[in-house]
Amino acid sequence: MKWLLFSLSLLLTTSALAQTDRYVFDTDEQAVRFEELTKELRCPKCQNQNIADSDAIVAKDLRERVVELVKEGNTKDEVIDYMIDRYGYFVHYDPPVTPATLVLWVLPVLIVIVGFGFIVIRQRKASVKQTWSNQDEVLLNKLIEQNKRQEQN
Image 1 (cartoon, rainbow, N blue to C red):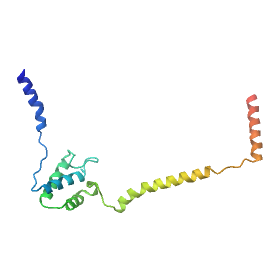
Image 2 (cartoon, rainbow, N blue to C red):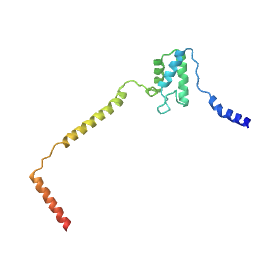
Image 3 (cartoon, one colour):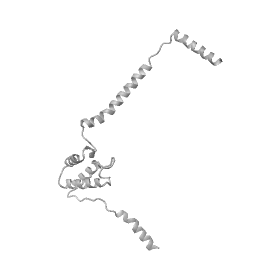
Image 4 (cartoon, rainbow, N blue to C red):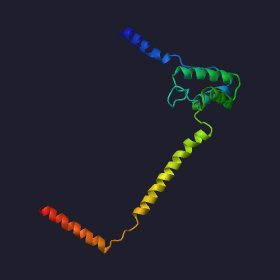
């Protein structure tokens, strides 16, 4: 029985020994730069996931390329520029302000302002008091009388 429990526990704990991506760097600064970059670069295949957390093959390739670039002595900005040149602005979580990205930031604000303005104008028009004239009173009484006659018939 002990042998069975030992074998079973050995079998179940081997998954904890699964190999993870461990990279060896020359300095601690390179390791820190690698960690920052992998958290700041987005996986091109995954939906809103950085390359540090992604299990996609392309993310693994990107991590390995980041390791190479960091070991070559490239700065953080140089690595980011390299990735943007190859994969576009999508690969970086903090894209620069361009006319295309400016539209994405300004358009929602404009929509909210226009919507708010529309609501204010509608409220002001609705709050204008309408006067009740004698003609309106006579017309209302006629309609009430007609309605009563129709109900009686």
